[in-house]
Image (cartoon, rainbow, N blue to C red; front, side, top):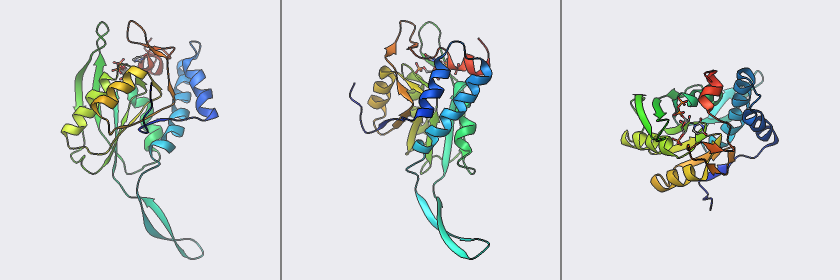
Amino acid sequence: MTLSERVTVVQHPLVETSLVALRDIHTGTDAFRRHARLLTLILAFHVLQELPTREVVVATPLEETSGRVVDRNVIFVPVLRAGLAMLDAMSDFVPGSKVGFVGLERDEETAIAHSYYQKLPAQLAGAETIILDPMLATGGSAATTADLLRGHQANHIRLACIVAAPEGIELVQKRHPDVHIYTAVIDQGLNERKFIVPGLGDFGDRYFGTT
Ligand code: PRP
Ligand code: URA
């Protein structure tokens, strides 16, 4: 597939190491959670890299100096459930951030996501709105979430995921060409059940211990 400049594959030895742990069928819930967090912390540097900043004056114990701080409202939107796995690590970097929730669940037969919950902050226009969803498979969940955010006037949308399938990237790029996608890896594709291969299985089940 041709990657546009709106797709960033975050490459780092620690990302690769955590990814192997997440993929490994023998990794238990505790280690799965720890690696999901470590990997998300590194993703966060890239996802948040282009945030605008403004100058501020700060008093050190010795004298006043100036520095720069983030100057944009940031709204994280975890797609329930699995997106919750990325929320703490991402929001640690942006203490004033707000959080919106979108509940989507894929039908086990059709793999089409249906919406069961949503709660979004009032003002999305002008904010950096970051969708958190570790698995970008068919892309249905991510594209539906971006539709919903756009319907609420969001105009700066990014998508942070951990494993992406080419099919999912293509769908999001087709429906939302301005959405920048960040992922730790692009896998081979989808199997007949629309699971990512080689993938890591069902992220939500492994993270929440519901397998
Ligand atoms: C998973 C995953 C994504 C979605 C990706 O959620 O967390 O939200 O599938 O698939 P798609 O790109 O084909 O839409 P799932 O529906 O299994 O729900 P869960 O997070 O509650 O486990
Ligand atoms: N959701 C997952 O958790 N894993 C996949 O491979 C596809 C969708």
